[in-house]
Image (cartoon, rainbow, N blue to C red):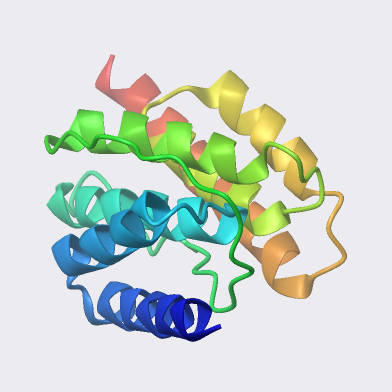
Length: 168
């Protein structure tokens, strides 16, 4: 019981670190929880965000003048876990984040916020067909914030593909 409470407090600390932009600390906290044997979609979603969010910050704002609608999981349900190793350059961060988001959605077709985060990552990796699959899964949500995020991502994708056409 004490261990569970300590892990819940760690989860809250990880969320706060993520919100504050302390991504390394957030990543360390979520990895530590996972190493303790508790993996849940929430852990993997937020761990993925600890890689996606700094990768977004590293992007050139002239090429990506967007506010991406990332979805932080604020509540946790602690379950069994496995450890993941992390790589630190931008593309590696994005690819690792995508793997982690996929783990978060493995037994949950209704975990729509994770599909939004996957779609953001796929957009940044310019994997538009995979992004469409993620957005299609997310579109089954009844949550307004998820549906708004889908609209925002479609606009960003249109803008990006239009910019790429003009560059050719």
